[in-house]
Image 1 (cartoon, helix red, strand yellow):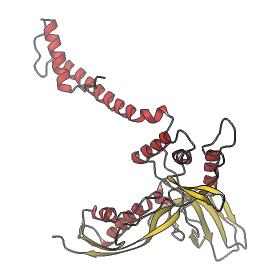
Image 2 (cartoon, rainbow, N blue to C red; image 1 turned 135 degrees about the vertical axis):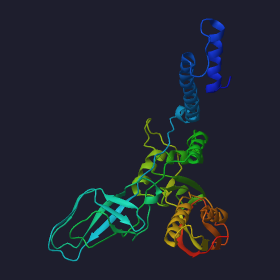
Image 3 (cartoon, rainbow, N blue to C red; image 1 turned 60 degrees about the vertical axis):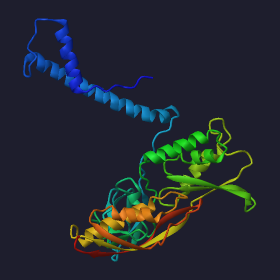
Image 4 (cartoon, helix red, strand yellow; image 1 turned 90 degrees about the vertical axis):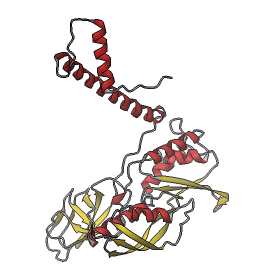
Length: 363
């Protein structure tokens, strides 16, 4: 098949000019600035742009075509959700928490309430559902981190999330999209392990999944465990039920399921392996201490919490995340001392991040 020949402006201009010269004799002034030269120039620029747009369009369509043929679309980012408790000391008045009331972490991650709740007289607290303002894994935070009121709520003294906030998932990357498509193709038989993983990953709330088979069956019942990760290393009961409905099916022709007859599947969140980081960072005077700490701590957290089920934590990659900042002059990582192996039913997540920052003059 012939390749797409992208024509440049100058080639188009010269081709038009030579064609006109060859096919008539009345027009002879083709110098820059002449009427005919200006007309050729305008047309050639438009045609060159059309060639460029066509090339970009072909590249985009050809990249998406394999996925489109099989009806596989990229998973969009998902919002982190959870619950924040609004508390007060004086309980004589009725306090209303409106939908859209904003709260935040000390690091500036903002959430908004998604339901209307009130504290009646005599009630000192109320739990309110919240959702991260921006979709993605950055909204996944541990308990006790949402403590800053953004919107003013009269009568409320403190706010906090007593449980973790999770479920936030970044938009599927090209690599993740391709891996899921590969799992889909390998799992077209449905009842093999690739098929079960592919069926689970149809759910946009999931970021990764893996299988461990049990010989003999675990607890005398389960032939395999399907581990599910929603980006926070956890999975909600709602998501498990939705995945189970797809994988197990309901016996109808419309939803026959993926698992083979007689195979019992257990659906679980992976075991979380916390990875502690202890390090000393030496940085230049190009940034302040607070800025260096904020940026590096956030980068390390994002790196660790972006791991999927069964993905090892590579120490050199952790070091690279920190050294990527141009103002970092030196680095000493004392923990972890090496790579952290993660099993098929496990997922790595950030533990205690204890990084010391020392500002020094550059070389």
